[in-house]
Amino acid sequence: MSLIALGIFAIISPFFILAIYRKHKSVYKNIPGPPPKTWVAGNLLELVFQKSLIIFDKWVQEYGSTYKWAGIMGVERITTVDPGAINFILQNVKLFVKPKGQMLALKRFVGDGLVNNEGAAHRRQRRALNPAFSPAHIRELGPVFHRHAENMKARMDAIFDGSVQDESVLHHDNLKYKDEKQGLGLDMLALSERSAGDTVASAMFGYEFNFVNDPTHPVIPALRNASYIAINDLDRALAELSETFPWMDKIHTPGWKSGNEAKLTTWKYGKELVEKRQAQQAEVDDYEGKDVLSLLAHSTGTDPNLREDLKLSSTEALNQFSTAFLAGTGTTGAALAWAFYYLAKNPKVQEKLREELNSVGTDEPDSDTLHSLVYLENFTHELMRIEAPVPLVVREPIEDIFLPVSRPIEGMDGTKSDSILVSKGTMILIPIQSVNRDKRIWGEDALEFNPDRFDRNGLPAEKIVSSYGNILSFIGGLRNCIGFRFSMAEFKHTLFSVLRHYSFEELPSTPKIAAHLPIAVTRPHVVGMSGPDSYKMPLVVRRLDH
Ligand code: HEM
Image (tube, rainbow, N blue to C red; front, side, top):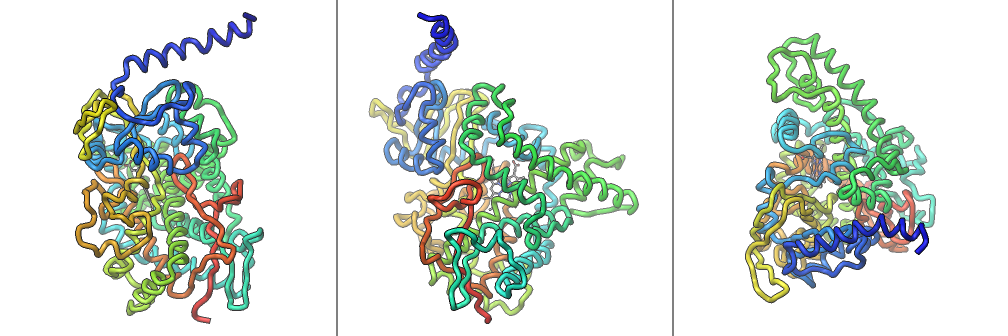
């Protein structure tokens, strides 16, 4: 044997022995699941290169609602779509925490913010931010949501009038479209994301980026690159690997660099804003702003009466800025883009929704008025059910634990059991999208888009811990999405302003649009295209009132 071969053998053999040892000690021997494809990568390659969650649905069909699969070198993982197991996990936030590898990957983009902290640090940050997301405060933000929705509509007006040539929204490739009936091919993802970015910055930090009218703003490429790179195969694989080999997170790939750049770009603005607001607070006695910026500035300030559990360091404050900005832009932006897509695919739904929006007796409704619209509520629920922008969450138990299930697990030996022993540190994946589309919860037609499903008796058939209508998109429990009320109010205001004046159709070439699976947030992607430019929602848009 040559020296090189001997060296390779010496490096690989400990891992090989570790994999055999793991298999021997496994508590999951009786749990069904797909056989690992290779001993090095387990089933990971099937996941990473598929860029979708369909594999999870396939495995549920084959192995049941709770099954095991393999990560790197024999590390076993669990996936569950079982409502009982999910409810138990989401209700026990101290027992089930986020995996370190996932937090490391997220840290590149947002620093140490609310999304990637655990325990006391998380509780303190969440307590400091809660007032900014309370129902009362979100209600007060109605006029801000309305103003940005109108800005988006005005941008579309300007594109149709020909007074601006927005190449980032108008198609300049094979999807370009224009017809005699005033139909234009527009990328509704670009517009929706820019509007969502403007809304978060304005409503939460009182800052007007005006991305909708300024596609060349430096934050836009930073955000776009970060979300594109997050979807990059290499970086996803490295984030996965860093779970087992933490040193791999030190490899500064182009993805790492662009994530870091996005963070530094948002920090640059955040720093200026926090300092400015601190100065304002110092000038005004009893300053009581409930917006995030005021709360952050206050939490980092010098108020001697500030409760210890509400104090944040300056870096923690900046991390919340980049967290909220990134968490609230790609997610609501993608949800809006999908909304236009499903309206285009379902003309009757589009007509019915427009009719309801036109029945509102004012051009400037408050959020309560929009929330009282029954069909808009059904449409919003159905959209969030069928296209969850955050497609999965991952947790791991801090100790060995029996996880109860509501759908019994059939073991490899044919025995049935109503719980599964999960060992400390096992990654448990909850594929939100599969749960939202589960026929046992939402009926035989669960894969179809149908807002009327929410008027049916007997649905949902199984209960899920959820912040929003039994749908898992914002998850539930103490670590639910803090921004769900914000996002849903913004979503409805945008549909109100745009849909009353514009209609949506599929392009005659009917490009296939699919959701790409990233580390954190899905993005609509034109199948067959590649690179950052493939992330778009190309639709034929027509102006109705001309
Ligand atoms: C359609 C829009 C949105 C969806 C689908 C969504 C979904 C989610 C999900 C699933 C989580 C849990 C992640 C996990 O535990 O791994 C989460 C957490 C979070 N979201 Fe959202 N989100 C949306 C909009 C927003 C907005 C608009 C904001 C802020 C303005 C926001 C801020 C956050 C924050 C700060 C967390 C971390 C909460 C914590 O860990 O305590 N999200 N979101």
